[in-house]
Image (cartoon, rainbow, N blue to C red; front, side, top):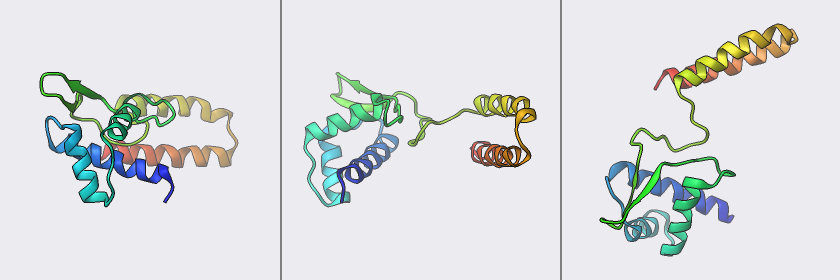
Length: 129
């Protein structure tokens, strides 16, 4: 299995632990990865994963992960964070719809139809939340 698939699996484990627990220690993450994924992961790898989830612009996760010195553990600063890529809030979806409505006059009919489908999918996804 390519390394990026291992990383994605670890990110999912980290996200699940941070959602279920107020604070999570690196050792807990490594133990959970071993148990759930079937292979050992170093503490350093987990620390790199946490930094990547938080700051790596290529990944684009921008997870609100913080470190508590007192507890020596990680936590989500924003408990509403949803693991995934480029989350939008409802006002951003509304703004996007307004911009698309303005721009649609400059599009060909087939492009307008595609844009309409994209907006429908976005609204469906974000209105359900």
